[in-house]
Length: 187
Picture (cartoon, one colour):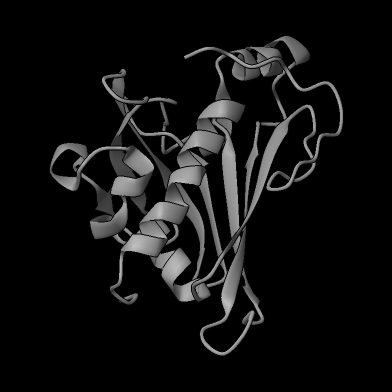
């Protein structure tokens, strides 16, 4: 993975929110209701969008409750490196908000469930949007990755040098195709 330049100040774009030196915020609008977007993040049968692999190869598991873990095998692009990742849930508020420490025990980042504040925290919100015409309302999803407050500037730079901005952007951008091609309803 080629590491993008470290953020140096505010950055905005058509689908990217403000960046700080310690976070990555992605804002995306989808033409489906919040419950469907929330389910794409929490239903193990739908997590292949996150992993970049078919479900049979990514082995998704979800224990959807505060303190529960979710896990998938992620692949960095076609033929790229594979590793386990996921998270430890802190907030599960369907279909409005998810909050989790990002990582997996023995994966990347290596998450110790007894010390969840040592890895990045992710906050995902799902805001209903009015329908653009007759039909189903849409969703504005904001996904924010926050680096732990105890990291010094060199450690923060290291995370960005690893490519977390690009990695999170590529991952989240796979969600649109999943939502537009999958026709089932949330559980």
